[in-house]
Length: 406
Image 1 (spheres, helix red, strand yellow):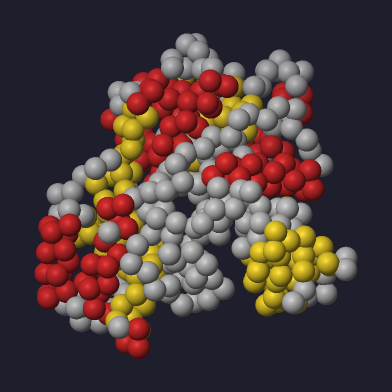
Image 2 (cartoon, one colour; image 1 turned 60 degrees about the vertical axis):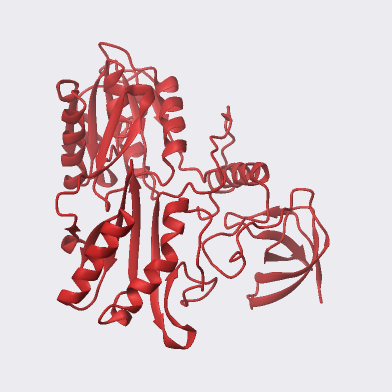
């Protein structure tokens, strides 16, 4: 078997080595290790491989606590301790900034990290009925496969959600068409847990009775989805409140629908918002723009600290939710929200929003390239024709400590 000396980790948690000038990406290996490996995909300039034997182990290697690690495709870094995961993800960020944009940060803040287990408050579980494996399977897909991993628990889900996996299998087994229910989404907020069942065929009266009984027994809320996202509806209990999460530093409660975007780790989100507000330092009398504002995760803390804030978001539904959250927290007088596609922003469309003392930019994964181009260079430097001076806070979406699914 060929040997490789692992030099670093890539953004998917694979060890990177070079053998005879070719890059080899080796799953299950860590920097500093010497491993035997077997390739499962070969290309002219690189190979993808599995580590077979670790001949020299890293001091940061740990025994993965999850019995499904290695088969389940949900996690990729459980064999690395949490401090090592944090450091590796920071290196991935620095490497990306340099190799893609030739940028080196003037300042790096300490990583924001949380617990490595039980933190994931949102998940999309695959469902597959496989008679040869005893019936329904519920969980994440296997690595490099469309098959659903055989699992009865998940260490990154909250314990009470992990404990539902075996009983969800039994529930699906008893449904009228268990092979027509491909997915269950999980969303946890406050003391409430939502399960959203995707079903491809109409449910029978007996199916609905089973779902009601399951919800009442296990204290969850069912939503159903028969076709596209527009068909998501609350099923049982019919009077269930929306989910929510709190930002206690700012005395805020934010409500959200289970399909609306929120951070998967509410604890890390609290630390993130606290740091962002410390950097932005909103003050009474300032007007601040929160771009890609979502349901108000940063908008409302800015308002709570006394500034007037304009939240801009491309989704009409999220803007409506942000307005509701502002009213829910008594901040509607300080908040204004508009629907705008910031990916198509121009200098003129941005100028139409008015003048601001500061900006907070929280872009989705695709980034904010068009928006940055729309900011006139003179304005950003404080030398524009209108004399405006901008203070911009850009947040790059980081992979979180203990978040091997990131």
